[in-house]
Amino acid sequence: MKDTAPHAYFEADWLSLREVADHQARATLLTDAASRWLAQRMSNEHHIVDLGAGRGSNLRYLAPRLTRSQRWRLIDHDPDLLRAVKREEAGLVDTAGMPITLETETLDLNAARFEAGLDGADLVTASALFDLVTREWIERLARACAARSAAVLFVLSIDGTIDFAPTGEDDDFVTDLLAAHQRRDKSFGTALGAEAPAVLRKAFEAQGYDVCLANSPWHIDAGNAALGTALIEGWRSAACEQAPKATARIDAWAEARTRALMAGALSITVGHQDFFATPMP
Ligand SMILES: C[S@@+](CC[C@H](N)C(=O)[O-])C[C@H]1O[C@@H](n2cnc3c(N)ncnc32)[C@H](O)[C@@H]1O
Image (cartoon, rainbow, N blue to C red):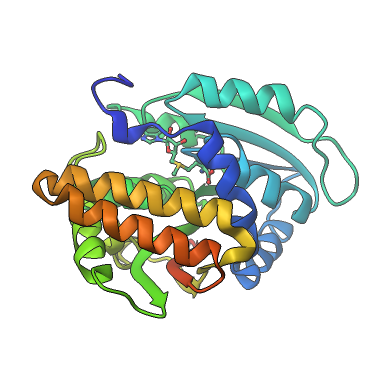
């Protein structure tokens, strides 16, 4: 599967690299809202399901910010990433210092009955997942969450904003190629890319959810140059895949932008949206 759908799999190193920026970017008011919603839920133990959990970044951010006992189920189709979480997160605790129960499940979210993985969930969450999926899949997820009366917290969905300061030659050329690449099939069908936040809102409103969106942008400059250079390299590679005949032009752009970033002469803002929604009481 890793060979047949390479864009549906992510390097552990890349996920680790983005984790600090992801945590800094998250809209804390939505985390607080999720925490308050769970606190008034009549259950001794909160069941939280993390979709496309990867190396557990979302778990590491959220678990220490939620009160009460927590049982987490981390779902991903990549067993190597889930094994790393199991290995590293044995000692994770909640706000009261109580250990968190953690289970992992290797599951293709595109499978016929993936909804069974949501059984028992009070909160369904995901981080940096929804640009990969389709409108139909989100509608299916919304129906499954509504059937279980689960709240949802989906963070860090790209919204299509990529701002370079100062702007440079070929920024638009490359970001247009990137937007087209983001729509490529990542194993679910034609991917939503930057449309995901709007589709989430519509699908969950259709199920009667109260929804809230908030910005969670990355701010990248020489202070987090390792993430910035990896990002530019990822964009270079995606743009070259999208326009193989323009490789020389894209390489020149990537080289110039990397040099400027390292010299402290460039900052980049990458837009994301966080989404929190609660079911009808
Ligand atoms: C961009 S990564 C985000 C990982 C993690 N949530 C984070 O914030 O670091 C997307 C994750 O979705 C997972 N994924 C992609 N397609 C999937 C599928 N069809 N079924 C299950 N997981 C999938 C990938 O393996 C990867 O871990």
